Every structure is written in structure tokens, then in C-alpha cells.
Length: 163
Image (tube, rainbow, N blue to C red; front, side, top):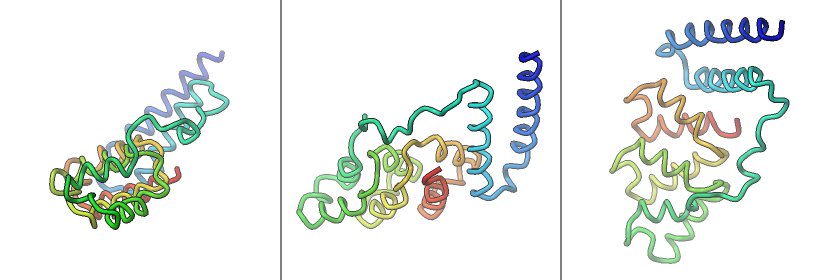
């Protein structure tokens, strides 16, 4: 009996996913983020998990810090005096680690995070993004041109933040 109920739930979820996937070009970023988290919740129900794993921000960061990634993006001359380091540090405040900045800058390409103002904007948009699964999922649904400029990346990051 339990197997049949689970199988029915899987079929229903798959049907909803197929419908949503077919119309993703017409959905807003907020709708895509909501869809991502609905799918994530359904997966946890299917696996009979009573609780999701504890949030990654309870663990020690495993990657480089936001400040380290920012200074790497800015190069040897972009993060070499105290005032620049203070600006980067202030922009990175509230970031769990540097993974968000690294992933977002990768979407923007080689010239997308090459100056202090761009790095600061992306770092501020990263606040509250403890993992990149929402960002990656939404950008994938938006397609190659849906997350390739600063305003698009910021909108997706800010919408995914805290979810």
C-alpha cells in the first residue's frame, strides 16, 4: 500500500514538473525560484525525510572566503591597499563563503567581475545564498542568455537569497 502511494506521488510530481518545464520560458524569476523550492520539498517528502539536513551555514565553510575570491577576481592591483580591502570586506559581509561570488562571476564571464564596483555588487547580492543549487537551477531554466549580465545575476541571487 505504501509503495502504491509513493508511486502515485512520484507520477503526480513528474506530471507537474513536465508541465512547468514546458512553460519555463514564460515564467518570472520568482516563479522559477518558487518552483525550484517546491520540487526540493517534494523530493524530501518522497525520501520520507522528517527533517532536511541542517543548513550548511551551521558547518564550517569548506571553500575560500568571499574576500579571497573577490581579491582573486580583482587581480594583484585591485586588492592591494587597505581601503580596497576594507571595501571588499564590507561588500562580503554576510556571505557564508566565496562560492556564491565565484559561481556568479563565472556566469558573467571574464569581464563581468573585473573591477571593484562589479565585485561589490555581486558580493552584496550573494548575501543569504548558502548554497548555489537555487541559483544554478534558475539560471539553467533561463538559458544561456538568461544569467549573463549583472542585473540578471543580481535578480536571481536576490530572489534565491534566504530560501
